[in-house]
Image 1 (cartoon, helix red, strand yellow):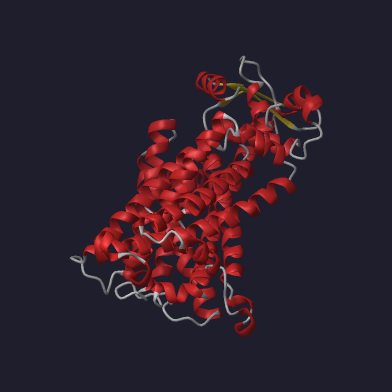
Image 2: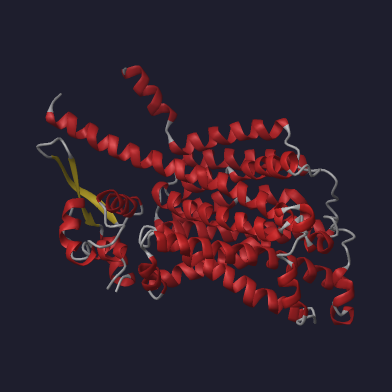
Length: 386
Length: 87
């Protein structure tokens, strides 16, 4: 083999290895996101959460807020909305705060803790903090609220974020986005809607609560799209483990210790905040075992969320926002998949079935991701050359 | 002291070219005690920076052992970003 050919092949192999690693990391980030959501269901399906959510009935909730919120402030509708906001923010805040603890431990074990402190004080660190606020308190809380208000259809709506991220990556960071990649993203979005189509029943399009839920889900898609594109780029400057530690601490601290108390205050029930924060982690452990403890589930969801978001950032920085976010977008399949395994099969809860269309959609999504990553015409050319 | 990733990118601010080994040589006095100061991790940092338009490949060669060395330099956009964001 000539020297120049050997050199060319070595360069191609190096690039190929980096590209494959980026794709694997981005796909795993989507899988871990599924674990995070399944564990979050586990947390909010135990202990006091069962009463607070009224066994998942969003139309006639348990009414805990009827007793504690002052209806003269804003009337029933607003009280209900604030109640939904409070529960969403509480769950999201606890999850992100635990996640931050996990990620800071990981950063320290990997010998990056001092760099973590240095990055926090820097300009790129400030950009990460802004991304964390957009993706955490705003987008994550919006997603949880949308799930409560509109049901599982919120997942495919929020999974529009890869398309938004790709557009932002194209406009701001001049990342590659051609017709083939745009088609691949469109296929992924269609697949996401196929996955969510099992939830397209039992609602009325005229229901204001449902429509508001869809709008809130769009906010989460926009927030994650912005976060994915900007933080993915930021990870080319800041180490990804440091990025995600900054993200989770900012998000967890802001959501749990600023946003949630403010919501309680708005509801005229500020005194209830410490009680509910404490109760949110309690479960009937002695009677029903460890898995009846929301604390255990939050620890699992926090770890999975931290790893998932970290890989999301790293995958986006290695593949570009379009491909990285499309691979991560598989979470719209992995969420029902892991929820089925954990809540349906393991815990035996009803309402977590997987449908054939969701498997078909997963295959469609793989086709979409493949189209973004690889030019089929070039593959065809190569096979002819061989 | 700058975070390791910042220090790596800062090397390229004045238009100089480095491969992984060059980066290690430049930074080993200050950063050799860092657990992340390893060729593979540095290589990934350089490739991510390239993917995001901060750096670009400018030269490459195979050494006597058949090991590939890829040299990078900052793009004009990269120089501007490094200058503005990394102090």
